[in-house]
Image (cartoon, rainbow, N blue to C red; front, side, top):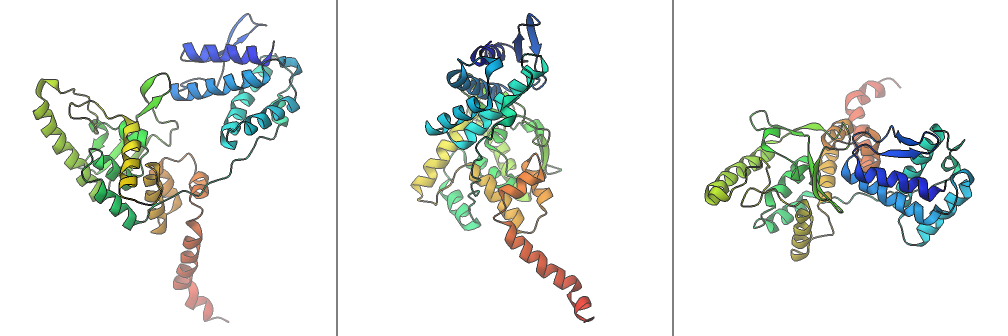
Amino acid sequence: MSVGVILQNLMECWSRIPSPRLYCPQRQGYAESPHSANISIRTRVGYMTCIKRFGRYLGTVTLQKLRPEHIQSAYKVMLDSGLSARTVLHSHRVLSQALKDAVKWGLIIYNPADAVTPPRPERKEAVAWDSATIRRFMDAAAGSRYRDAFRLAALTGMRRSELAGLKWPDIDLKSARLRVVRTRQRVAGHGIVEGQPKTHRSRRSVALSPSAVSVLSSVKTRQIEMRLKAGPAWKQTDYVFTMDNGVPIDPDKLSHEFRHIVNEAELPRGTFHGLRHSFATALLSANVHPAVVQSALGHSSITLTIDTYSHVMPGLEEAAARSIDDVLGDAVAGNP
């Protein structure tokens, strides 16, 4: 069986059933892949794209004759064709898992992807705005229908998909907290899809500042006014950020509007996701512990938080050095 065929079987299964399975000829049936449970449509589409890619580059090689040099050569061709190192690395992870399953099911005796060195993407420094630039942006966005989504993004660090999936039952304004339990994002070939955050840490409770509570209270009041104005045309969806008829906003429109405002106001380069970076950078610069920032952002690990915002950390280390002098400096200096 060729690599292209086995990956094509996997792709076809992922495209038609909730739990992807791989056709195993020795068993004359489908074998469940242990990593396939609860896979989101967006993730599944991404996996299918990777599988198609390998079908092109490795499709003529039989599974039993697949060697590390075949895979390494495919990666070189991918990079030479213009794919980013991050995309090739993601493709490597998908292929490696598929071959791991093939070993488990007795189709091959070892995983050749284990002996391959995938490219390492360069970590780009997160672009964050300072408070003055954020104020300029918010002033420019005052007339936008998405202004409150922009404000909440800056005040909570929530992702675009999380804001688009936020519903009123997820919010307790009295206790100043909200729960991130849902996402809405556009997936190629599927339109806008509602799903769950990818990891258990992404499904989180977020403490709201007084400013964030004020923003949400204003949204609630404005939505009541929109509902009364729309009358029978109103769609009761419970989403926080909606159009005038209650239909939830298109998450892509947030990014499009953000770019438009940035260009019109001639602001420094930035993205909607940059509001999340600005939130995290502001907290770290205020000496908030990275573990607290990790929890607020829903990062899978504190390592990810520290790696992403390592450019902020040197200043924090200097502040820590000064703090230890304030606490213990005199005690130590008094004992030469």
